[in-house]
Length: 117
Image 1: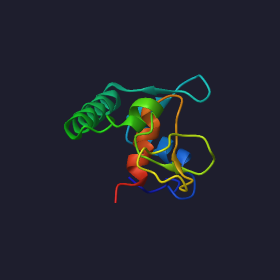
Image 2 (image 1 turned 45 degrees about the vertical axis):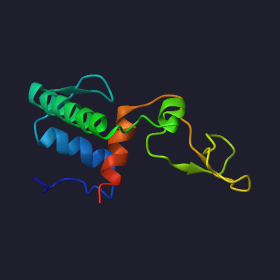
Image 3 (image 1 turned 135 degrees about the horizontal axis):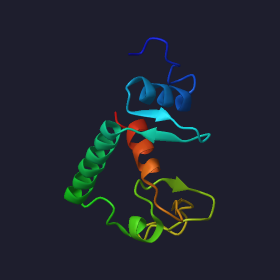
């Protein structure tokens, strides 16, 4: 299946779109930038969502103060002054945990894919 596909390291977005079309999970639509997800592709997406949801609930993931107050599920540090200060942090520690206005599933999936090792 990887023949004639753009490499992931070359252009991730193009590679992903080509892969989805070649696997017949979705097709390009008449609206620029939009794809029509086929039933089989949507079924896979729903199964992934259910499995991730189950894993999150089993581990209590997302129940921390950082997740509840700042949509920060991965505890990424920041030194910009914005964010949530850990309660156990010493006064002289300059880092905080990043704070996000909204929680987006696509960011969770990208983080999990990039840090799966």
